Structure formats: structure tokens, C-alpha cells
Length: 233
Image (cartoon, rainbow, N blue to C red; front, side, top):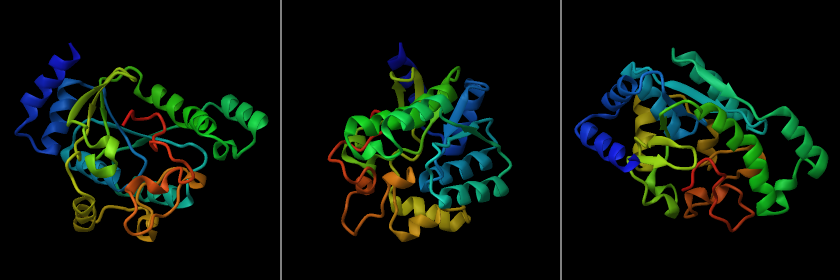
């Protein structure tokens, strides 16, 4: 059934702009369309497009408790610029307390399993809460972000979270994203000008060198697929 729904959405929106698709989705799935932002470049473009479209899309973010100050700065500037409110979801305090009491504040450096445990507590559980009861999840995923995202589709069904995913910037290049930001005066995380492309929690993110993969700065001590459980790709 999900395949039929996805194909129907692709057919109905094939000639739509991104803004028109936002409006269509917010009408088709009234009050059940959400967008998750981490205030990265792609997400800032989408926030700007949502605002311009006037679509009834709920914007939310996950505050893991370990974010860069620069991320909070762009969060604040984004709130000031746009009228659409941004809901905030935090990890469960007890789960974080127990993790730190048992393994300390830096357990994620010790193993992939520990890192994924931290991501699960700080990101996945709050995301489940944010997505619960909704039908469409808008993301800032782009195909060129990593090899394992190269086979993404514009619309997909996320079986993990049981929700339709819409990836509006799927085919955009990083250059196109930056050009949009510059032309439209979109607030941007200052770390992007310092070599940070993909920005997550402060302890788990570093700037990348010229020629490195876009995701090289995330969990840079690992040789894993560089995902945290929010997206299977």
C-alpha cells in the first residue's frame, strides 16, 4: 500500500515547485506535515521555502544538549526572521542522567555501540515523539551527501518511523544550496564558513579538509556509515 501512495504523490506533484508541493501536502495531510531542522544549510533553505509558500507545516528541532553555540545562534536568528514557530524536543532527562552516571559524558568515543546508544537517547527517542501522529516528514537530505544516500527518492516511505518522507532538495548540489542562501539572505550557521559542512553535536563534529567526504567530519574517529538512526541512509 505504501508503494501505491508514494507513486501517487510522485504523479500528483511531478510538475509542482517545492513551494507548491508544500502547499499540496499541507492540504492533503492537514495538520500532519512536519519538517525537522538542525539549522544546517539545507534545512535553512527549506525553512525559507516553507515560509514563502505559506503552507501549514510544523517545524521542529531536536536539542540534544550537546549542540554548538553557533547552532543556537542561528536558531535564534531564524526565529527572529521567520513567523513560523519552531517546536523543540529534548531527550528524556532520566535516560541522559542514567547514561552519564553509568558510562560518563564521553562514552561515545569508546565504541560505535556506545555512540549509537547516545544518539538513540538524544536524537532517536525525541524524533519518535516529534513524528508521532504525523503523516509526512520533510527532510533536508541530499543525494550527494554520502554514498549511502545516493539512491534516495523524492518521496519515500520510512518503515522505521512509519511515515512518508519528502526530500525536496534531493537533487540539489551544495553549490545550489549555498547560492540560494546567499541570494535570499537566509540565516546561516557561521561554522559553515570554517569548514564545517555537516554539523551535529559539538563533540562529534569537526571541520573537513579540502577533498574529504562531506560526512567525514561527523563521528570522525569512526569507520562506520556515519548515521545516527534518524535516517536509515
